[in-house]
Structures are given as structure tokens and as C-alpha cells.
Image (cartoon, rainbow, N blue to C red):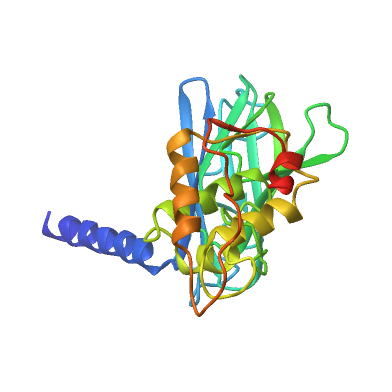
Length: 274
């Protein structure tokens, strides 16, 4: 009994140590009907790209031709343990995980949480199209789930280091109207931005976030923007007040309000004529 307790303590310590090793981890949950299986992947400076004690093996699937498999999901690697439920790789700029999922009984749904993936990395899921022709790439930062018909799939997870894009404040890989809204929020709440957000929101590189950055981003992306930008009245008033209060090192203020004090900005053309 004492020996069994000792072994149990060692196992718990191993699990706790494994959890604390990872520089970052992300989770994927694969669900079929009422059954679900969790998977974890991540990076650490002391991990190996092959199997090591930071990884957790997955149980083998039954041989092909026996009873139907309701749910099987694992990361695939080459080695003694080819199927893993936890796969921590060596920290590096670009990494790839091969994910195999299978269900013979029902449709598959994948959901994920990638909030711990560093903001300077893009993360994508590459999978076959539903018709079996070609592949699609899912941005895992902007999408939170994926559904696939029952079957056997090999998916690829890509985590790639990338340079910050000026104006991409929400770090989704695109510069669009959502980034403009976020800069407006940052003007209203100057304590909110992280260092990365401050750098990407500072469009003119003057070391601060100001209404000028909003205008510059509007002008530079006007050909991609929709014809209306919904802004509530309080936001419009607050941004105009921020514009009026903005002055530093003798720099002149903008001569006209950035946002009309109404519930909608009418058109991008109207903004440019102010």
C-alpha cells in the first residue's frame, strides 16, 4: 500500500512538472455527439520535437475492421509513441503539428483556446474541404471552432513567427475596421493597451496614440472599409474630446472633429471632407 502511494505521488509530481514546463500551451477539444477528447500543444525551450517527458501518449486505436470508432484524436509523430494527447515542441519561430481525428459514427466538431499563444505568432489550422477537393486554412485567432463530417482526417497546425503589422491592433493578421474601433477604445481608456498594441496602433510612429492615428488608419484603409462605421454617441464625443485635448511639443491639433457627434459616421467620403 505504501509503495502504491509512493508511485502515485511520483505520477502526480510528473504531471505537475509537465504542466509547468511549457512556455505556452493551447488546447483543442474534439467532440462527437456527447463524447469529447481534449488535446494540448505548445512550446518550451527544453522540449524536443520528438517524444520526451513533456509529452503524453494517447492510447492506440483498435485495429481497422473491428468495431466502429466513435472518436479518436491525437497528434502524430514518428517514434516509439506515435500518437500523443499532449505534444510540447522545441521553442522556435515556425512549428507544425500533425493532428489526426476520426469518427465512424458522427460529425466532428473542433473547438480551441489559443489565447496563450504569443501575439507575435500566427496560428492556422489547415484541413481538407468538406467536398474532399483541396484544402482550406482556418485562422485560429479569428475563428473558434470547425465542424467536419464523420470520417478520418489529417489536419496541420501551423504556428508561425511574424512581424507585427502596423495598424493590426487586434493581431488577427488583417488591418480593417475592427482595428479602427479598437484604437478609438484605446483613446478612451489609455491604460488598456499592451506594448504590442501600442506599437501597432501608433500609425505615425510619434511615440503616442492619438486621434491622428485614427485618421491616418481611416485614410489608408478607406478602400477596404464598409460604407458605415457604427459608433455610439458617447464614443464619438469622447474621441472628439480626446482630439481637442491632444497637444504635445508644440504640435498643432487637428482642425476639425474626427467623428461626428451622432450615432453613425455616414460615409468614408464624408470623413475625408471634414
